Image (cartoon, rainbow over the protein chains, first blue to last red):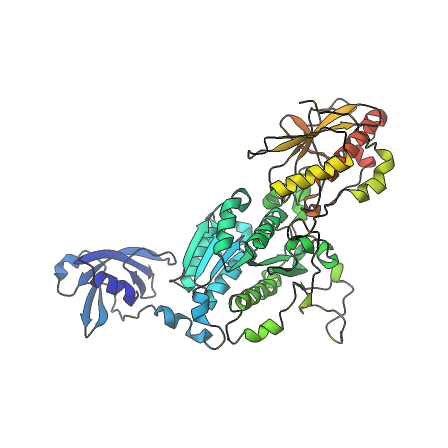
Length: 413
Length: 141
């Protein structure tokens, strides 16, 4: 329990209240709170909170009774248990939670920051928790999916979370690291709520795009440009043989400008499950169920960790930008728009040098950064004339096979 | 679709097909679409419907505004790699014109239209020769 909870009860007009005790069988550990909390499990019992001068007989039916008193302005609690002797420890105060980050991160600054995370799969879940551990104070989370068995190998969710909404699971994980965090949850498909996306991007200090489909990436990219906000886009490529991270900063190239980049374009995003790949068109409708399974080629959790980690570092650096801190020096290092990582020398990385003796040649398990040229005619981010793809390549390839002289035609409605 | 993008699309269509009537329908609703006529090489006229929900950030669904049949008389209402079709919507044959991974918001409606016109010409070749449309058209990721 926290002293804030006890203080709140002590200053209320109630003589007693019933709270919750979360207990782990055989461990003689009990977590006691005045209210039901989001981030605990174990067996749950009612617990009676009493102001010290009240009648203890009231508590006879309860397994635990907490006597709250105040002496010399200091709030204290004594816990009476029917099963074991209880030594009371309090949840650390907000300012004590991240004392170990001090000197590296400006915790007071991060506490005021709001991070929007779209997609709470193996990427989004890990990033959310890492940012909570760093002391970020506010989150808005978007994902309409539930935790399934195949998620468990790479997701932060555990067996006890099967079937639950990912937004609820990650909220609990965040609050488990920072009980003071403020979390807003949206278990919806963001592509169908573009006005809400606009509002939430406007409120966010940084947006993490960890989705598995281009539609949401393009929608977020348009909104980031419009709202002049920083955004990070990350993905693993097939079998997580590698991955990449793209950072949008206002005025710079957007995600749409990245699409024409040769390294980015060479690889397909990882297909991690058939249902979502069907939904977003990565697996075409005409592919049979049996063949669709062959598309699912996921890598190890350890393969995507470095990519998540890079996104976390970039996010912390952006959130701390302009504030003197232990990570300010990264502003001189992480200057690129696009970062690429390879886990194994296979497929598109097959010709890379082996790590021993690679010298200046590209090799695995190192980050490579690149500046991406801004497309001056981009339909999402350019303030100049937009030049769309009008099908010149198709016409030069198939022009003699089709007659595009449709003069005078009208539609049959 | 933003008004700016709609204007841009109309400009491209006007530039490329000045004499063709394209009809934008239900543009203020959540299910906007455009109807565009196509005349094939053998002179047959079809209407293409392109659904604009989510366009341009979402790959648009494209249809021939009738249910076509293969040479063998089978209704083209389902997903077929050989015939470049996807499951029907609105009771129309749906054309597989783009792979989702290849789609970008830079692609114009006119390009989608060209691909649909190409698909219809290959459909007629299929009716003539009996060869799958896959024989004439390549696939895209």
